[in-house]
Amino acid sequence: MITFCLGTPSPCRAEGWDEGRNRTHHARKVAGFLIALLPVGGREPARAGPAELAKAVPNDVVAAYFVGGSHREQSESGDQNSFQIATFLIDQAFKVGLLAKIDQTTRAWLDAFASVSVVLEHPHAVMLFDIRAEKTDEDGHRLSGLHAALVMHTRGRNELIERRIQHLLGSYTNRDETTLETIEREGTTTYRLRDRRLADWVVLSWGRLGDDFVVAIGDGSFERVAATLQNPSSSVATDRWFVDGLNRLAAEDALLTVYLRCDELRRTSGPALAMKIDRVLQALKIAGGERVLWAVGYAGRSVEIRQLLKTAASDEVSTIAGAGVLDASNAPRVPDSATAFAAVDVKPSVWFDRARNAYLAGRSPTNQAGSRAYWRDIETRAGIRFADDIFAGLSGPIIVHDFPKHALRLPPAWTIVAPISGDADRLRRSLDALFTTWQRELEEKCSMRLRRDDDGVWHLFVGVEGPALMVTDRYLVISFAPPAVRQNVELLVRPAASAAPK
Image 1 (cartoon, rainbow, N blue to C red):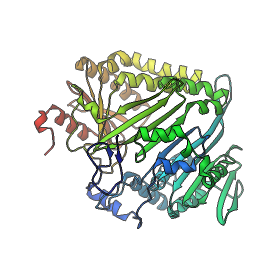
Image 2 (image 1 turned 60 degrees about the horizontal axis):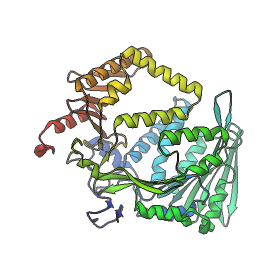
Image 3 (image 1 turned 30 degrees about the vertical axis):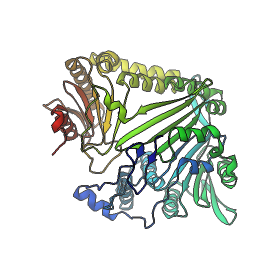
Image 4 (image 1 turned 45 degrees about the vertical axis):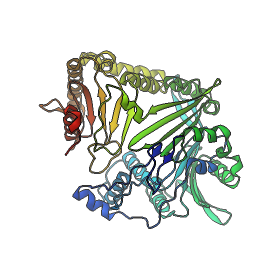
């Protein structure tokens, strides 16, 4: 049996999924100074696996995901994660007025990002009860209903959550448009908010329920969670398939567990949305599924992703990413200095087709036609075809890793390496033509710039350099900045015995 050991203080056995993450992070001087200013919680963060978190999730939920432990990535030196750094910077910028002139939409996105850090402080579950849409014209749809909830297992550590909510209330509500009710529930005060500027179905509720803090959207969503917490026998934690699935995927200590009931999602979404959902599921190759469970965790430094798919005929377990993929003869090397990697056994052309089809499946016919027309125009102006000239020349497995480390540990700041199976010169010429076309378009329309260095590294420039990519004779390398690409290219061309940086 595969055993997760995430978050355990003792060393994990070689077999299984383990944390293997208790390493000291060394940030640069400026980042270290900012980190030192961040508040550090005095108590050990709560931990709860998906089976425990599922006790708050009603059994008729259509989708849910579970994050079971603290993701602050706090090391022995007390360093904090990138979300906390970003939250600190955003909050300080608001306080000193640096963001006073930005538009409301941008401000809302910044506040939403800053709120993620607060959520990730605690084990939590996000659940979707239903989602509905209505037609606006011949082929357009508009969201007409949503019932969902977020449950954070805080053990009473609600101060940062309440402070964040107070900030949001002060930023986006007013006495003329907003109605805020207080509701007493068994000696605990909870809140319900409506705003005339929002659709009638947008009802926000929040408050503490025992050891949990709940934020819900949609009339009655908060009450459904409250009833489930009082009666866990009505929760998904008692569903036999779900519990067996956690055991089969060894997911109890996973970093992330995702649960989807395809049948219920179709049933509760209404006819306007059900057809789009079916097209998306078909594009993702799970169209025949009744339920799906995914688990993401670590085995040493390898990110392991596993799937359990229930169809009418069987339950099938498959591995999406895992260290075993490295056994392939053409697998790129993982730098010894990388502290985490994911090896995905899929060709980029397959990923491209699925991602494109899933995206288009969720769009209206008019938007689909517009998207296709745009990309056909890009291909025509560049003189290339994405499928034939770029993706057909790439193969798997794809390796994603965290060397070199970004100074602020930003989550997207990883390196992607894909083997080249076709003509490297053709791929290089095609990418040069594509980026040259985009380069001219960006110069005409915005302040972003695409630049090509003398050694063939392409990168975006928006005040800082990156992301970037380069085509070698054997690999396509993508990373967060030109120096990161060059470091990886240097490692890939060295003999295997000297692949580790000094």
